[in-house]
Image 1 (cartoon, helix red, strand yellow):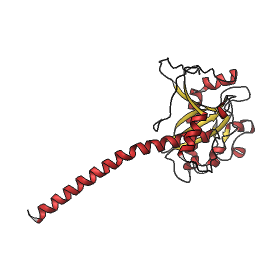
Image 2 (cartoon, helix red, strand yellow; image 1 turned 60 degrees about the vertical axis):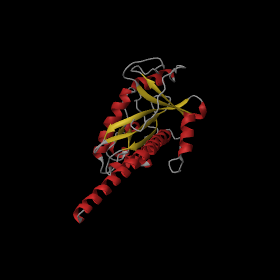
Image 3 (tube, one colour; image 1 turned 180 degrees about the vertical axis):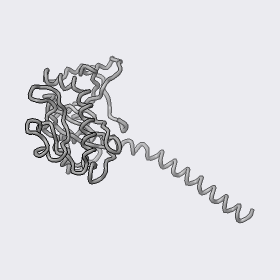
Amino acid sequence: MSDAAKTVLFATVLCVACSLLLTLASTGLKGFQQKNALVDQHRNILLAVGALEADRGYDAEEIEALYGRSIRCLYVDATGAVVSGDASQGGELPMYLYLKDGGEPAAYIIPVDSRGLWGRIKGYLALEPDGATVAGFAVYAHAETPGLGGEIERRWFQRNFVGKRIVNDAGEFVSVRIAKGAVKDAVRQELQPHFVDGISGATFTGTFLSQGLESILQTYEPVSLNFRTRGMLRIPENSKVCKTSPSS
């Protein structure tokens, strides 16, 4: 066999071996990657309701144990009612209840999937049982520019949502929005309860996220209305249970 043929054969064998190793590594790590993505989403759901300290590190076991004790994921229909386990219908929406200390719902959490400047912004928005007040906000995935729109992942920005109102004094839905600058300087006083401070240099990110939050909150408005008028939801014993997944 000539030296050239040996070289080609060696290169071919090396390429095949490397491809097999990469395939095996990818397959073997896929389960770990999915588990880590799920744990991160559970962490952000808990952060949205203030069940975790943002500046403290938690291992996966702590997060999963707390999530299992305090979060219940259910489906609601277009009227805002919890779907029973034997129901089969389209248009069901996932919703998470925060059962603090295993008691009555202390908050409810809705998933956020909004357009951003460069991609989708995904997170969770938590509301108080009054159906009107934001309890927290957390982002777990985005493609915004670091140092600009990427600041949406920072706790200083997310904490601004706490206490904001999605309805006005007349009880009408108005959503919550990101201001173009500081709320106290950019928004009329009577509207300030519905706005959070914007991010300097990230006007488009704020605009798109505001539009996304309005659309999502409007979709879940029947749920919020039930909380506002009834104090809480009626949860059937055989309610249809859902689970988070890395793609949700």
